[in-house]
Amino acid sequence: MRSKNQSPINIKIIILGLFFLLFLLVIAWSSYSSPRPNPSPIAENDDLSDASNLSTDEEEPKPSTTACPSLPLTPTCTKIPPSLANALVHYVTTNITPQQTLKEISVSLRVLEKKSPCNFLVFGLGHDSLMWTSLNHGGRTVFLEEDKAWIEQIREKLPTLESYHVTYDTRVHQADGLMETGKGDECKVVGDPRFSKCQLALKGFPGDIYDIEWDLIMVDAPTGYHDEAPGRMNAIYTAGLMARNRENGVTDVFVHDVDRVVEDKFSRAFLCEGYLTEQEGRLRHFIIPSHRTSSGKPFCP
Image (cartoon, rainbow, N blue to C red):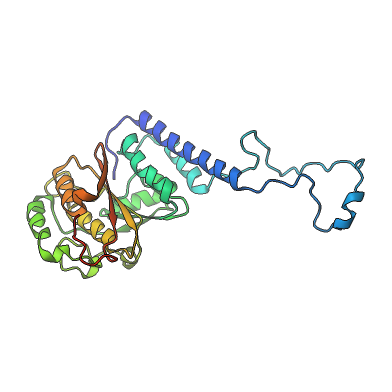
């Protein structure tokens, strides 16, 4: 989730464009849903039977000084939500930008436009975290991060983000052995990861992380670009297990950096190619249905 060197100007324009589009959508929705004013308003204390006796010569009431100005496309005044305002200010005033490209971000954005406000779980905490929280305005967005010092650093700048420190006891160089482990029958059993007998299931998260049915899960951590890094083997498997274990419905699961061997192989094996709906750049999008409502459903279609 931490940023890598990219063109800061291009990405900043992308982020501002996304939030401006979201702001316009909020205004348009509010304008559409707001009731139209009564052309002949009558005070609540007026007697309706005397309404016809109102003099047309009376001086028209002056508009309230607190009323919002009426604009051609916005007959009602709508404030931008604080989370979106904070995000706009943050990204305008920083040169540090998310590492996902516009096209990659757009994949998740399309899903959020349909599902938000929703429950959104993100493996990783970074400079794009405020963006995800803002795009899921009104929902719950939670970040899981392996670096405690990094969490504190981000919290100083963005205290409103909900994040938790988690630990991983694997290393990238163990990936081949863990892939063989994942082929065992115990790893094909769908259930709560806390009680799974599969070595790939992560059991150390805060309790409510397992209790919530997540509508979206983004796997963009832990670190996985060198042999001694934790790697995303367990995170990918656990994301798939959580999706299958929901009571009903589907979960959209995203995996970033699929150009790397671990992310490529583990996402295909445990999120399943049959559930793969889209790949854009280094991002894969899987839609995984609940397996609890279909007894005997195979782990992969």
